[in-house]
Image (cartoon, rainbow, N blue to C red):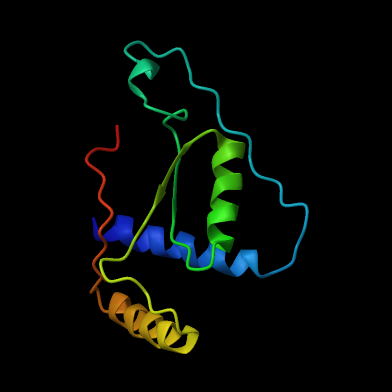
Length: 121
């Protein structure tokens, strides 16, 4: 579970940084086509193709727009990760909190989130 949160936070950070980079023409990989495996029942997947999950957290909406583009390009599931305690509106206060949380994550202590996933199926 800790690795999942770490990977999610790493994805969020990379999305935040890439949304500010100003590079255009980002090419996303084509999703792999599902094989003809016995027992694969794609009808149980509520939306998307069930192979990818886009997790995002967006304070200003920029990361959400990028996540929506990835969601559309990959035809996958998407989920917003919301902190248990919402971030402050003041940018400097939010930045200080994010730095404290990052330092805590490096020691293995993860911030609480109110988003939960029952199953990854």
